[in-house]
Image (tube, rainbow, N blue to C red; front, side, top):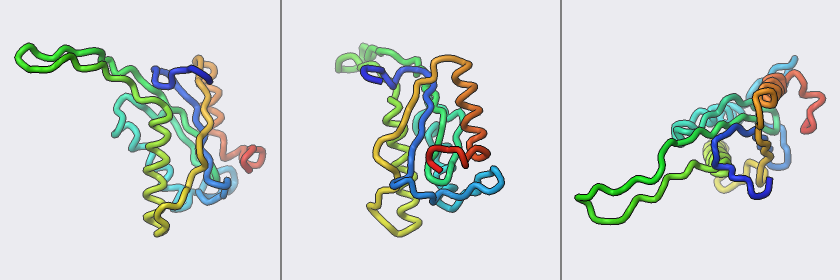
Length: 163
């Protein structure tokens, strides 16, 4: 959405696709996702987001054969402008801003690509498509519907637009 501040607190539905939409993250068998080694890396890296960005929470995610879905929540850091102590030289410390959604997605894509390229001995190879899809989650009903969509995604793989 144009001019929207994607660093403000809120929940966001994100979809990231594998380069060329190649189905290499695993297979859906009987409505359940069976992750490949690459899919396991993609799943595990979501847990690293909150370590790097403590005010970011990955509410849920689903790894599919050629894409991933997640809900990312950005919480207010609660930190505004802070004055320097009188005993120290210098001006005022600028306010700390929340990290934008794009930064979180870029970190995830970087971390997964690096680990996958190390595993495959393919340095510099692009793993994810450029950009990603995002949707602002506006209310609890929207959140619940998206959460259920992500949870049920493997059962609905045959009808998925990326199938």
